[in-house]
Length: 523
Image (cartoon, rainbow, N blue to C red; front, side, top):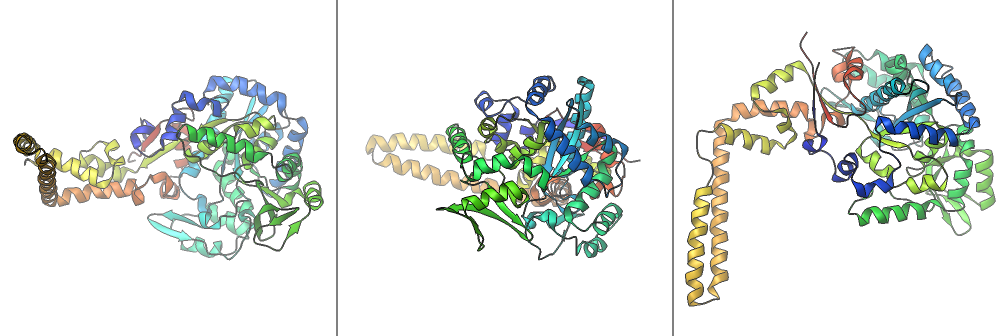
């Protein structure tokens, strides 16, 4: 597999906000603690060591061992879970929704990033242990975002009428979907047929793919873990302390010209029950479960927090804090939008005296199969050009390869000179003729521009076969006009090459914040 890199900015696929963070722009530094470079982890380890309680380690280890008891765990995963009791063990974490069949490729890239980050950290700090963690977004209730995936250009959808937290969904119906999916799907067949809930099924297939690398999967939809988080629940639900902290940060970011990603509410928790996950909202002296008839007094909500905290679920604002509260975590690996919204939360972490983790961008990659690689070579175009729009690529190729003069730049210059002279002559007679002359100049120049476009379109028709070849490459590498990693499923490559994941682990560097081009070589 050939490996090339290009700067993220050259892909034209990322926001200026995210790029400013990657480039460590000075104005953004107050919104995070440390930038994720290897040498910064020494101080991050010290911060976490001094603030993470042993009781949290003990609860975490016990819960994880219980969650894995029905799964045939690898020795390295069991060892990693048990090591979490050790004050010298820390985690690198990524999180993601429970997309069926893993969803888009970048899910795989997230996990590869945390695995490789732990390996690099172990080599640099051998006296410590580093455990890669995948945090399942089992409490998310956005079924529409997880119900489908795309394979070989076709969209596969899991239809279910279930509601509430998706991790609690029954796997009913996925057995039928598996039969529609082409190729080897044994990993998913085992996961969906041997497990009753979506959370258990996702743990199963993620373990099948990454268990040998020691990846630990955590489901935080758990009573014991949420009991640890009860002080934050009370602080936010009763005290409403979070909203002012986030709002002030948002004002500062917006003052710098950045658009914030997430909205903070007075109460940043959901009420969670079977088939239900709905916002908690305070109205007067009552706490309402929005869009239901359920409500609580202050004493009743406090009673829930103390006795059944599993019925309280953090939203996007407090989920990051919950993660850092229960994990001995050093860095969070996320996509561009995730990294950005974490920057809104540092004051919340400071308020609760929890070290703000380093925010690591996940690996970004484009995988080019050998068949498409051959077609790409035949186009004669450099790969970075394919990150542009189709029209831009077609126009570029046509202008570069045409034997005809397709521009009217000389004529444009002549017209400007003529009208500049006409304007001077007209204004010498009557100054009010100046604007009229300028308007006429613009009209003629627009006509020239239209003529130039017609020349280009006519020339493109003469090269339609070649442009169709270019279009095939573009559509293959950028499905639906976007990045491959945001659309295609990893089975596109894994079904042909069972070493695909291990190749990603070999080639991708978690601390190199570039865009990776991976070109498969023909056997």
